[in-house]
Length: 613
Image (cartoon, rainbow, N blue to C red; front, side):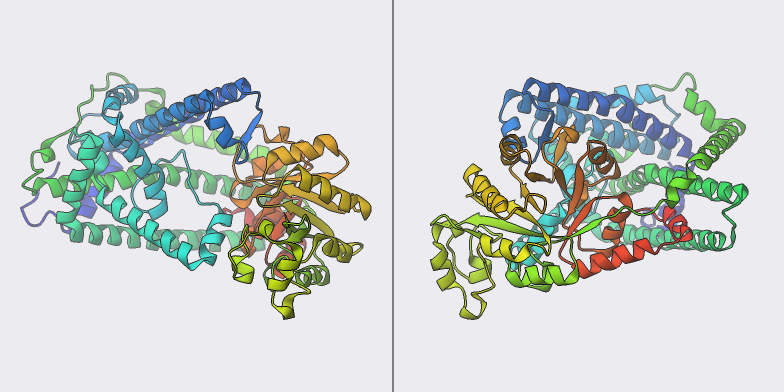
């Protein structure tokens, strides 16, 4: 590693060139290691894990696990086995991805000879005993939750953790929840920054996770100003360069789209080739971001420890790995430029040829996506109200979705929350009051509109709009299902009403007892074969409504509905994915996006192909 005079080693003009030069020098090894690791996970580890999950599910007689059934599954021995294997997979991810990058980075800074992939993996696998115990669990928690939540630090690339939008909507609507969430994010941010060098102290300093976290906190505390300045500068530089490249690229793409004649094969080949080039560039950038971030932290780690009285001995440590004795296939491909170029050209030619056969797929007419007004009429009117129903009808929504609960005296009313606090300002639950008591506690000016009885709501919807009725709250049971079905039959609304529930057992009950009644299962988590789920409609939280899941639902002969989508760009995404319906609080915005989608030209759709969603 290059050395500098004391007191000058922290200057950005010293750190940045060293970081870039050493990273680029060992770029083939970073790239080779990342590709092999991705292959190992995608071809061996993850498929094996999901096969094991399916085996455990089959032992419980299950084809799919959802948010409705996962708690029950996890309470059995199969659930405990699943948790143990999942934890082992996370440990392997930490070792294979992050420990590997730290090792390569540290050796690159000391001009150590290149090592083989298997040797590197085997050396780091010996770190597993360190991860056993509370410290290892805390490390997993840090990488799995704190890093994604705070957006700071280096996490695992093969797993994505996000808060579902329906939960964030609840958080944002409640000041107390929002304050608590803000506090949690702040704590996650502070801990993520303090523990930023934990991986380096484990791999380079040979410490156990808890001791590594403590050491990282000390090292950060004593160098926090330089650390924050360096990362801020690199972040701003990265944003500037990325914006410059992306802007230039899309200006060029838009120019070509406006001037090329897509009736000609040559023009279509050019655009298909550019799309492939963009996809490949995004892929390569994506797999190199984590190694580069690790390398930046490694440079800072050695700089900070070198002049630290407590950790100066660590600055001389270099992870030992047996020297490589022969090149792998990927080594030959990455080192022999001619072969790499030839391989790239062959791949490019094959993809262009394939694109010619599939090119018409990009110009198909948009799917007929229907609009579902959330909680009656969306944000435009009071939720679960008759005014909301009228608004949904006036705006031309295809469906109105409402929540059903049972009162103390057996009537059914429209209300979302378990308690009446948010709407009426009282602490009682719906099932603790009679219908008359709810009426009396409702402000007189809103008595004819708020928390209406289900029969009144159905009577006013007949012939005007179809309805989705969610069985909600602690009274959502088979009795509620039977009573609601009777009301539907009494009004001959079998073709105009869909019964929804988060409780899968209720959906199964209705499907078995009343197969002619339309049902929809609401879920935000699924493992296994979703096509095996009962229900005519599958209502997915927008975060899990991937193209593959939507296609799987369609192939199973069911209808896909996404909830709750309120951002115009997300509406556009799901319209393009061909979902059957979108539940939204912004009915007019949704209808506007449908109009825009239907008016898109072939050139508009071509441009959208280059904009990742």
